[in-house]
Length: 446
Image 1: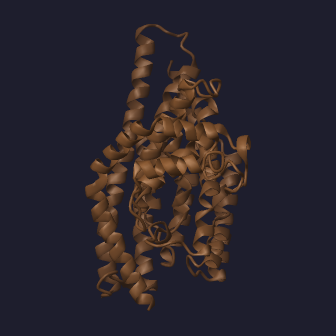
Image 2: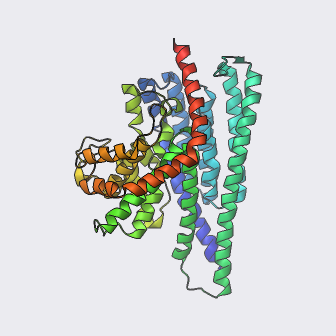
Image 3: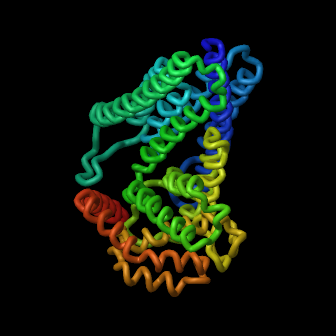
């Protein structure tokens, strides 16, 4: 049993190493993404700086790739892969032109997928040290000021004030990652003990993989929630759309439509995938995500990139449910802004060229956008939202999906009322902060 389980853990390390290599490979496109952000006006980064970043990323990638291919043990690649990614993030953050804070919290959670508390602790400590060094360098490069009073901080004042706050946030991230790692180890140990106690040598390695895939799925969902926190609305939005997508899918199932695809298992996976459909927004600057007015054409083009950016992130997920969940998650992420008449983005697909689960997700996404408050609008009434779904039947939405939304009008209204009651107090506070922030930014431009 011990040999079998050690073999499983070694295999798990190799599988996660593969995914980390995929993440690092995607970092090679980061300088190009930042350059496109320059063109869109999101930030102004010198081309020489982007070239230096590209050289750093490529050099570390080549070293890591060689070790990954030829090292006798996967543990070497395990350490080098995640620590190299952390280093790249800290170097970019040190420049002071791009605000990178929450990304440091990603690496402890990624480390927890290896089911090693020691490794999670080492990665957390390195992330903290990298964040502190990056923040210290940043204070020496650029002037920092208080957003609302325009008070200029001295480098030491800025470093002390913000290093304490960021350290506290990263410490809580560390605790959560360690908790998830410990829980994963406990579940694995309980599984092994149960196998030993009943002499069940016939339980296959595949069944243990299923148990651990469920744990990986929970960790990844938690990562999605953490990474969406830089957008005022994404956190609540994904929870709302998870509920709405399930209601629409089950109504279609009850009507006898797409029964081969709309099994209970697939609907459950769709609801979980809804949590990840906007994960690509982590590449969009906070100032654009939380802008109180309409986007400029350049800002809208940048916003339209989030489905494809999200798919790139999801492509490095370990297989869940034999890869079925991954397929559904990638489809709803990439295609949830496509329209039935072919006028959507990013691919301009029409009718049943759009995957079924993406068509359902598109309806849930628009429904929540209509019913929810945004910085630039008040929530729409349920009756007005239903009127829009009637008008867009066969235009933006598949007719039977519009019909399913209309059929569940009362259920959707009850859900919407519940969401508003639960979230109103937090929304008022957050809205006031962001409005004050943007008023300050606008005043500085005048």
